[in-house]
Each structure stands twice: as C-alpha cells, then as structure tokens.
Length: 204
Image (cartoon, rainbow, N blue to C red; front, side):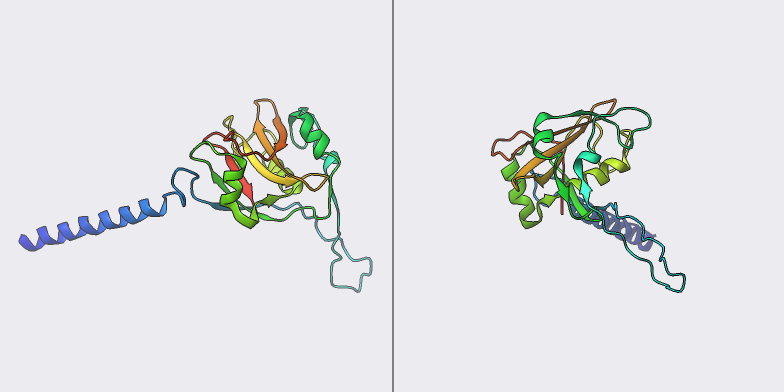
C-alpha cells in the first residue's frame, strides 16, 4: 500500500514538473513587451511556365515585379481579391507608387505586443530584421481577403509592418479589419507609444 502511495506521489510530482516547464516555454521572450515570436510563411511567387520546347524537361521561372497600385485599391465588392474599405492619404502618397523587384515568398516573424509601445521600442526589439515589403503585406491580406481568421488580427487591433516607401524612408504600415473591409494606413516612425497592447507586429 505504501509502495502504491509512493508511486502516485512520484507521478504527481513529475506531472507538476512537466506543466511548470510548459508554462515557462509559453512565457514572452521579453515580459511586458510582447508575446512569444512565431514564424509564418506566405508566397506570391507565380508558378513556373511550361517550356516552349517540348524536348526540354525544365520549367522556365517567371520573374515579376510587385506594383503596389495594382493591388492596393479601395474596393469592397464581392469580386475584390481583397476587400479594402479605406486607404489612408499618407499610405497613398508614400507607398502606392512603389514597385518592388520581388513578388513575395518571405517567411515573417510575428509577435503580439503585451503593452503599449512606440515604433522605436519595437524596432529595437526586432533588430536588423525589422523590415518587410509591400508584397509581404499583400500576401497576408490575400490569405484573409474578407476578414476571415488567419495570421492577421481581425479583432479591431492593428497589424504593423515596417516598410520603406518610394523615397527609401522607413514607415509604419498598419492594417486593420474595419468590419466591411481592410483599412490600410501609414505613418512616420516615431518614439511615442501609440501601438496598443494586442497589436501584432510582422518582420523578416
């Protein structure tokens, strides 16, 4: 009987140790700043074209540019590739004329702010891999065109990407689901806390 009691005690102790370790793994990397970092993949790369020579066994890859104005348009029709209900004036001025040489395919890291933070606080946390591209933003939007569930937050919290504009200046592009479509804004990088807790940040 005593042996059974010891065995049960040992089992309960081991279970408690496992739960404690799991809780430690789930803790934020930097308490008070953000939740744990995840990586998410998304690709806009076109499929390779069929070779024109029937005797050739290799496909010919297409290279395309990402033209922002061809994608970021206000349109909430059911036929829209992504429902966008609002484009901010700063985004339109700084980003819609941008052309990127790569069409997409990056795996981005993402985390959720656990406290209000400034751009400079976030960039300091991200380090050298802080930048994204407009193609990365569009790739995520295409995965959730109607505000359906996915990597982007859809609970009235912003999703923030740091992207260089047509002048090469780094800006904060924020994407928020507004109920009938995505609202896309942009702003200069600042040092005042303006991104609330719950904001999701993306970077390379």
